[in-house]
Image (cartoon, rainbow, N blue to C red; front, side, top):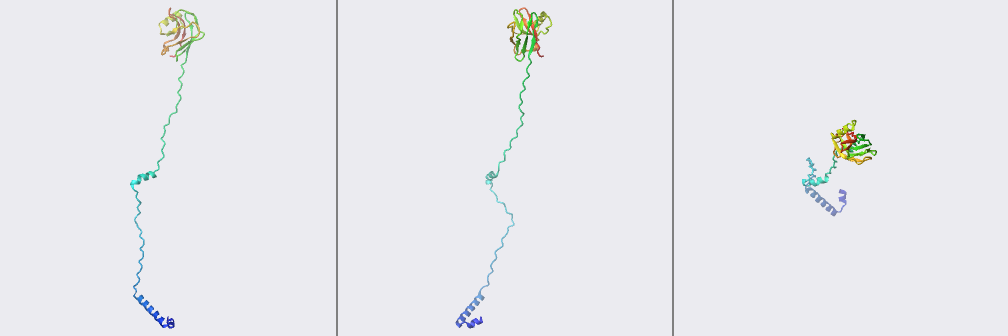
Length: 208
């Protein structure tokens, strides 16, 4: 500083000194600097964060959106018994018998279907012609006696007339009335109504 001041012109020196004096005065008179206030430390809340509340008015719509419909559970089905085929009713056995001589000679046989009541004479049926002949079912049963005794049994036993004898030979068909109890009858008889005589008869082997 001294070297510089000695080498400076006088007028410049004076200006320099005056400026220095002013600077010193200003420095002395200036107020102390105001300290800068520090930024406050951020406060940390210790309270638990409360979840945001959802308006109950919006709940149905929200639930409707979020709810997944459960899968439909199939209803249990009851085990059904397998249908069984109806067993056919056992067929009723046909009844048959061979004609034997009572008052007159005879050949052939008959077959009776209990289910239909159809009584059929065989093709080889043949009997001696006579007056007022009928085909009847009779309760008389003993074919071992003579024709008179047998005829008397026919008169005094249950009897049902199937119809007049159609002809004296060959196959022919008669019908037992529906509802007839065959258990009451024991023989098929070619019956002469005029003289109350059995011309011929065959056993009726019905089930009892």
